[in-house]
Structure formats: structure tokens, C-alpha cells
Length: 371
Image (cartoon, rainbow, N blue to C red; front, side):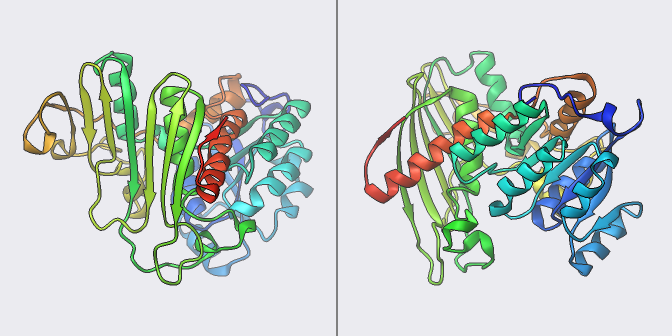
């Protein structure tokens, strides 16, 4: 089920004790950089099949995973669903709902890359379908296992900051020239733009940390020549807890701000720089091959303190916990094999989509949207 267990899982496919056989749909950025390496590195999972009709991508995948099988279309998976234990959907955003629906109707547990859907209603419909069929449905929100996010959760759990009043989160880049592709398409059907891309991460993190949203205000702009969808977006969330989250996602930031600036009644936490795991994966690094996975140098640690800027030496260094992307698929394997908790449920994803839809409406109408 979407909450924790599955009635149609490993016992319906692989032999008891054997690795769960995973089919990965899509071998672009998400599939090749994130999902395939993380699946292959997870004890109890085996990357069985990759769905791509692109010969170059097949060659790329075969070089790293010589035993993997290939399928040209997802329909080939449904025809042999009894040979699989999990389907991972890492194809373009517009395909997420139809492919997740087809996988569930084939009685296969599913992981879907973020965003799960284009609307919260679609996400809840998928959750209902998974519940109806007793199947596991999870969403890949890997930024919950970023080093800075894990460190911030630790600080909050320990009460180091006191009562948090304001949470600032930035996922900024300097890309003055559009790269093209579906993510920057102006076609609403593509579910592109930074609001749904990086916005899916920063909104999810804010909701995990500080609870449901009461209201949303947003600004979404198209800054670059040739761009067709938002590339510079700001989202303000007032949480029911009283915390205010200010979230920035941008491709047009010439001077990057802190990744996190969290202000509380006792102290603040400021952290610059991105978690190193994506860069490690892009460069061919793999979890399990080094004891230093996800570890950043001390020079990048954030600072906790009050009364003086961290840029002028204020506060104390706060050791950054190692990033832990492999923990997501370890939790997926435990959920399927042992009935452990779902690491990211479809209903959690739907709550984030409520915020993203409200943000889109707010930016379009220049208004605050109550939830």
C-alpha cells in the first residue's frame, strides 16, 4: 500500500531471498545519473531491465551494467510483469501519470521520480489506485537525503535553533543561456519550468521540516532570451505551524546565496554550497566504493550562531552530516521485502503539489492563495 506495505510484491515475483528485480523506465539524466547507480548499489535490489530505445543510451548503460536487459517500450514490461518486482519511472514528467497507472494496473510496485504528477488530484488518484490494488507507490525525493537537509533536521531535533521563525532555502544556478529540451519548454503538457523541477525539491523539504502550508504567495518570471517557461521563481509559504518559508529556485542568479538560512529564537543556521552527491554521481562515483560517500570538506560546513554574520566569523562551525541518497532505495527494498515504511508516499507528494499549484496560481494572479 502507499503507506508501508505491498500485497503484490516480491512473493509474486523473485524467489524468497533473491534480489528484487527492478525495471527502470528512462535513461536520460534522472535514469543514468541517479536511479540506475543507486539501484545497483542497493543490497536486495537488482537492475534487471532498462527501457530505452536510444542505441547510444543502451550502449552507455551496457558499459556499466553488462547484465542488464533492454526493452524498447514500457509495454514490453507489462507483458512480462511476473518477471519483475518493481518499476522505476524516470522518464519525462508528462509520462509519469500514465506510466505509473499502467504499472499499477499490471500489479507492479512503483517508484516515480518527482514530480509525481502535474496536479495534486492526479497524485491522489494514483495513491487511491495503489491502495485499491494493495501496491507500493513511492516518490523519489532524493533531496530529503542531502547533507545539509540531514544536518538541519538534526539541529531542529536537538533544539539548537529554538523556535524557528523563518526558513530560507535557495536552489540557484547561473545559466544565462537556455539549454533547451522539454524541461524548458513552454508547453504546459510537459510540466516543465523551475517551479515543478527544483520547486518540487524545496517545497517538499519545507513541508517535511515545518508541516502543512496554510497559504502561498509566489513570483515566477521568464528572464532569459529564448526561454519559454519560468527560470526565476520565488515561493513564500506560511505554514500552519507559524513558520514562514521563503524558497528561491533560479537559473539566472549571478551571485549565489546560501543554500539554507534558518532563523530561530535561539540561533540561526547558515549553509552555503550544494550537497556533493549529484556531482559525484555525474563524475562516475558510486556509493559503496568509498567510505567518504557524501562527505564534504570542513571548509564547506555551515555555521550556527547569533548576532554576527557567518561571513565575518560569527557563530560556530556545524559539522555537515554525510549525504545519503542510497538510504532511499534501501528503504524501498525494506518496504517491499519486510513491510517497512514507505520513504516518500504519494500523499506527501500530493501535498507538495497543492503548494506548487497554488504557487502557479499566485504568480499568475498576483495574489496570496489560501490552502
